[in-house]
Amino acid sequence: MKNTVNFIKEKTNDFQPEIGIILGSGLGELADEYCDYAIPYNEIPNFVKSTVQGHKGRLVFADISGKKVMMMQGRNHFYEGHTMQEITYPVKVMKALGIKTLILTNAAGAVNESFKPADLMIITDHINFMGSNPLIGINDETFGERFPDMSNIYKKNLIDIAKKCANDLKVDLTEGIYWANSGPSYETPAEINMIRKLGGDAVGMSTVPEAIVANYCGIDVLGISCITNAASSSTGAKLSHKEVIEAAANAKTKFKSLILEILKKL
Image 1 (spheres, helix red, strand yellow):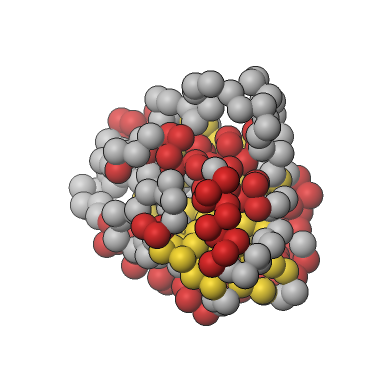
Image 2 (image 1 turned 30 degrees about the vertical axis):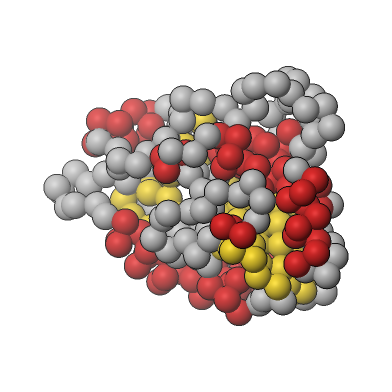
């Protein structure tokens, strides 16, 4: 950890971020427009490189609306073969760099039948169905306690800020529970029916490990999903990652505006 943090500080002239953002599939444009420093993951000690289309795989540091922001332009996933500890290591690095608030974004499939592609959903809670937990293993007391409480991961004050910002911008914002599967295959119709019955509103393959570790580290979390597709089509239409990228691109303008407005209010 120490060599990672020292490397980043050296590359960014000791930039001291206060807010972290993890940008999901097709949502990385914000880091292209606001960039004071950028470091590819493959140059950073102990980082693993993302292999997913739509993820550039770099840390970007920028001053946005007077806030010092650290952005992950793309994330690593459990389904890529990385361990839970590897994919959440950057969150611990954020904690070590002094970040207090983390905005998690993702592309997700709609389970709630009222949702449509390009909707934005505030995550109010999550269900971890990935079959693992990033806190398994020896506990490091410098980050958090062995058995952390998970009853208040997604902070109400941050949700209220996001809702006010969306209202000011006249951006429609839904709310719901994010269900995380390991991937990389999409869900079957039977699985989506199960998720719906068990309370999931949107389903994806990320975010939950990062949210768990951020909460464990004492970082306040705001989660926003970009709804990119119906999670499983009863009409027989084929799902694809290309569809996810295209839908995220259609939502990027309002998504970016919302994130920028939230940063002003934090």
